[in-house]
Length: 352
Image 1 (cartoon, rainbow, N blue to C red):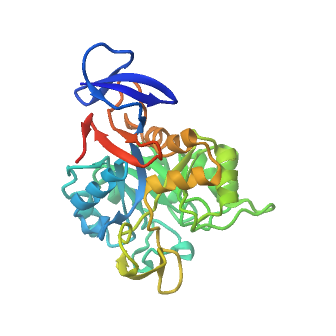
Image 2: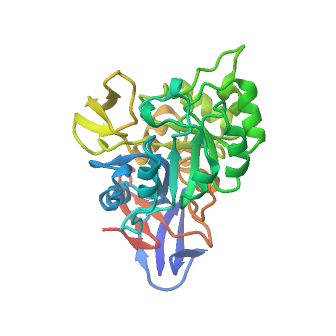
Image 3: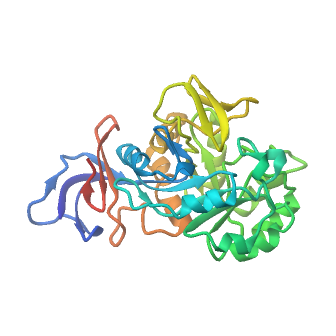
């Protein structure tokens, strides 16, 4: 399958897809689908999202979510679990994931191995110490969020790092403990600045450790969770190779204001902002494509914003996606001149 007249990095180019993968780029002979000079970017990869269009990952019903995400340029994702009973987490991870639309690459397990003090919207009832044997029984975990100061975390990190990305979050850790966790194999910050102490010049904590070591850093770029100035600072500190845009979306994404459930707890959404009844922010009601556009609005170059939502998260979790390059999965998005989505292609096929 040949695609003609695609604008890639500002230059017109043809490309070929065979068996769902990019095989050639350049001036190609033969007929093909004419993209009319429209911009083509890689399909977006969201490694931290709890749901959308009324669905929650803990419902273990992914079809409508995969459809919504694909229509919004997200071609692959990690359904992110909540702090609930372990049998419910296992049920979600053992459910049917081969749905039409955005591809489920595995799961992000956010809790229950976290700190009660920074639980955020997580359910305190189910928070527990890390258990590597319990964890090993779960299928297809691509990322786990853990608080490194919780008893048993270091031993857990040493083993879990060979199974998935270990991300640090929902934590009250000190700088020294965070540095030890990173030395032991932790390689990411979970929704940076949220559910952790702020950066302090004499007590740098997890954020300072992450900045010093240059591990990956997730950031929710919805314009609510993080101030524009902090987004730009993180962009300058971590760069496009390490800063990962995430949505942290919940079931109210793509829906109207109202009352919802999140991790077994009631959530109120007002003016598009989701909060627990105690007032804590409970995920977002945005999607990753909207986060890319918000980053651009804040002053980040479009190409860089796209990279932080495609190539960088894909590289972090070790999947063959997120790049317009020979040998990579042919997931891509065609954009109109105003950067609205013209079409989403998964494995080279237009998603409809």
